[in-house]
Length: 65
Image 1 (cartoon, rainbow, N blue to C red):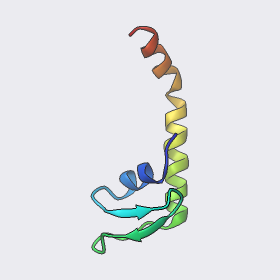
Image 2 (image 1 turned 90 degrees about the vertical axis):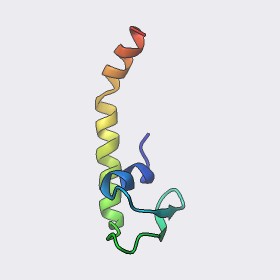
Image 3 (image 1 turned 45 degrees about the horizontal axis):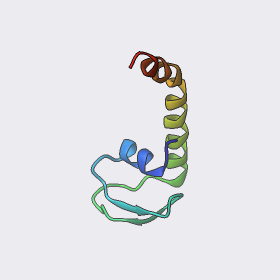
Image 4 (image 1 turned 135 degrees about the horizontal axis):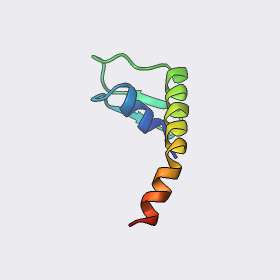
């Protein structure tokens, strides 16, 4: 399952932050614009859909391991 950390790594590589698991509680990279909560939520959803779409490939790879 993808989470806020995965979304932030995707949206703003190199940025530093603190989260409570659901939202950013502290943004530690003032030189990088912080994404909005809506942008983060959308990226979590996108990453989760991408992960789910590849479930078959993961299952097949495991079958041949």
